[in-house]
Amino acid sequence: MSFLDPGVFNVGLDGQAKIEFLADSGSYHGELGLFSLKGMESLQLGSMEFIQESARRILSNSVAGYLAITDSTEGAKFSGDFGESEKNDGSFLGEKSFAMNPGEQFAFLLLPNGKISELVDSPKDKIAIFSIANANTDKSVHFAQLGQGTDKGATFGVEDILASQGSDWDYNDLIFQIKGATGKTSPLDALINSQKEWRKTESGKKLIDYAQQFSQFMTLAAPFNSAYTVKSLGEVPGLPTPYVGLAFKADDPNTLFIGSTPQGENSQIYAIALQRDANNHIIGFTGTANLLATAPGLNGGLIDAGLGFGPNNVLFYTTWNDNTVGQIKTGSSSADKQIDLNDLGFDASTGGLTFVPQGFPGAGRLKITSYDTSTFYDTTVSADGAGTWNIAPATKSVTLSGGTDAFVYVSGSMPEFKSQRILMTEQDADKVAVYSIDENGDPISSSRQDFLTGIDGPIGAAIDPLTGDFFFSTYSFGDFNPHGFNQVVVVKNI
Image 1 (cartoon, rainbow, N blue to C red):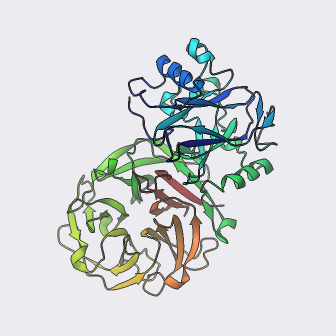
Image 2: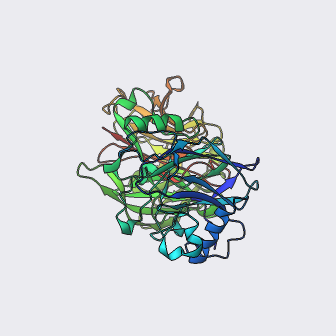
Image 3: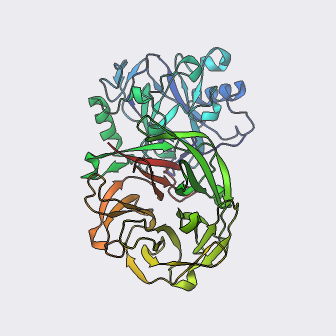
């Protein structure tokens, strides 16, 4: 058995994992425990042996595990309506601290209705729910994350009923916060039943406000927050992580292309079918992602933020950190042409790219960003006679900030934009910025405004050709944005 990242937590350097019980809307009376994963690698996730050993460790009240919350005898920090009436019993006991071995991995176990001690002798008679989705009987995520974690902590909502038992997927049955340890599951946005939304209740708002002291939440800046909503669509089924650039297929708005660099070793582009609602807004994915093409760099680089169609529907992509642009013709499964930008006046290393759409100043020109230097470049392309394109040396550059990656051009007819603009992902700043543009289609650096904040590791950007909704992919791998998700985020006009 190998422990996958989602649902696995790492104890901080001070060896103190701290838990705070925030809300209780579950009808059951159960217990939540945490247990060290050290030495459990040989046990099959979700097996009777795994369940029993997890329970034993929790009951040991030692560095191997602890009973953290008993909701039959203790109350949560927040009370009131969380979409369902509160089920608090007893007094709030405050933040609890548990001594564990620094750097050690651990996970959570919830026994929804009963005592964890019952799992030691009769594991078949009770349903154990784990923070590791693959350890659950239904293989579903039952610990959803509210916002994105930070070095300060993270917040989780638990769904205490299995899919086969008629779960309502509201993730408000038990809500807790953890500090002194790092770990992540999947974003609540992508999991919650929209008919069971509780975060806009008065009690929900208070809890979210409190969670924001320790977690990072995606937030639209004024005045855009009056006209748009932001939501995570979560992970793309079947797409290896981490994620990079994304683009809608040129002749099919119901297919999304998205780049991936599996384990930071390969360079690939996948295709995934999209699901739309009655108003044509994209609400999710259909099926699983299929490998479309390999997309290597010239000198060991991997596909990055830039992914978009150029003339004659040739698919262009950027690679980091060898500073190249690749081109894939329709029907090809690998690069048909690769260009080294280092000899053309582009600072290493890209970065994003976009051809200026028709109707905008500079229409048809190619724009490229350098991520490392946050520089925006202008250039042109010319046919090479082989169905691909030469790139001319950079003719103009604009210095921006924040670790510039992918960007899109936005029509002035979109609510609150008022004029033609650029939306720019800022990987290092965890933001998406908006810029006014000049007569050449380049951003005016002094016009920068926040558009979206609290989005950890934004890298790809695209616009839905049917609705004008904005799409962003985010990147998390190793020490780079370790608290963030690999996900697709949609900003929808309301």
